[in-house]
Amino acid sequence: MRTQRNSWALLIPAMIVLILIGVVIVKGLQSSTNMHATHGNRIKIVTSLNTYGEMAKAVVGNKGSVTSVLTKATIDPHDFEPTATTARLYQQADVIISNGGGYDAWSTKLAQANEQAKAINVGQLYAYQDGENEHFWYKADVTKRVTQALVKKLTQAQPTAQAYFEHNAQAYLNKQNHLNEVRTKVGQLLAG
Image (cartoon, rainbow, N blue to C red; front, side, top):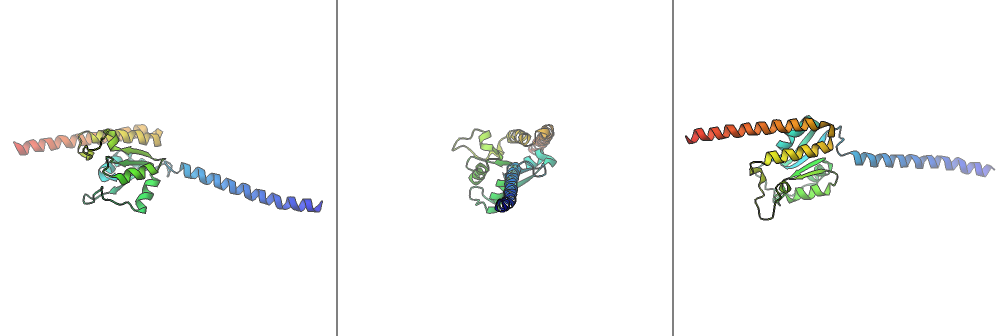
């Protein structure tokens, strides 16, 4: 009888330890799964190019943060070699914007590696085909296409903020249209 009690006395603490370990593992997995889009409810956006980073900052506003990998025009995206820090940025991102079209193949690959992130590939917004010009930021409607894609992806990450994202996108588009009008008038004055 005493041996049986001693067995139970050892078995009960062992079972409690196993249950606690299981709870810790489950909580860790839940935390890892929910990590994206819950960093204090701020959306983490990573862009390959600063051009897209500017658009993302305008649309996400105070609901997130934006990190652009290439911020200097002197760096050639074709030759850029991402570091471990760059890979970590992409792995922790909720939304990723790549130029696509082979221009920043490293960004496209890192975006594909983060299956939980919502990716925007600008080349896909234009149904890019090999051999076409991959400098999409020169296209007249790139701002509209990218901001619309951002509103969609950001709304997927934070559905309750859809109106906020839509408002920010429209304000940014209005600002860009106003700047284009000013540039046109300046060009006309200089020509005439």
